[in-house]
Each structure stands twice: as C-alpha cells, then as structure tokens.
Length: 83
Image (cartoon, rainbow, N blue to C red; front, side, top):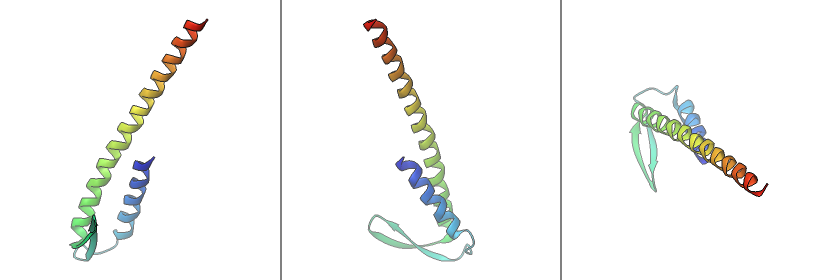
C-alpha cells in the first residue's frame, strides 16, 4: 500500500534526525524547492504528517475490509440465486 510506504519513509526520516540538536538546520523539499529549516520544526512537521498518515492507513484498511465484506455478500446472493 502506498500510504504504508510513505509512513515507513517518514519513520526512517524521523529516526535519522532524532539525535540532531534542535538548533541544527536542515534543508527540506517542498515540490521542487529546497528551504532551510531547523530540526525542531522539521520533527514537529514530520510527526504531524505521520499522525495523519496513521489515520489515513487505518481508514483505508477499514474501507478495504468493508468492500471485501460487500463483495462476499454479493457472491453469496449470486450463488443463492443460481441454485
């Protein structure tokens, strides 16, 4: 799932910067632009992004489960109609 891949990428990034001092500066990309920011702001932003992705992953899994159930129900209806 693409969301889970993005989540792993964010986890790796947060892990890579965890030992840097809050005042350290890093470059982040926004589209095709790089901008300078500090680690503290970057950690906060990445953590927020990670939380949002967690919610989206959970919601997507729930939607998939619901769709799977609907498909199985329809299959049973079709089998009952055929017999």
